[in-house]
Image (cartoon, rainbow, N blue to C red; front, top):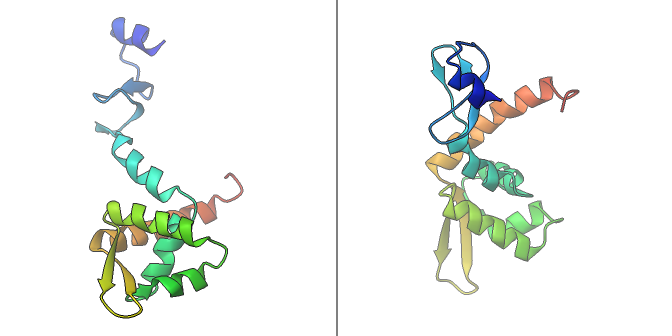
Length: 134
């Protein structure tokens, strides 16, 4: 439908138009905003326990794996390990390994992880105001 409108060269404001990446967005004032860059991030933080991990790690300067496991006792060790690895690959957390006996591993938020965590608080406030709609 929208491609036919484009072909007719009709200036219709507020209708979805196609971005260079192929997604369709609503024209917002002066520019067209594409949400595609957020897709990878949403896939990572949308995984079960990822947001909770960012919150728990962010509450500490650094936190050991065993303390994360205690704080998130409903999460299996294998799932916790997988989520931590995903967040590390996304450069949202750092993993520091100490060669001690027993081995010690600590996790901290990266600068990007702290920025994201702060942005998520804003998103959370928005969601709580709109909770009856979600």
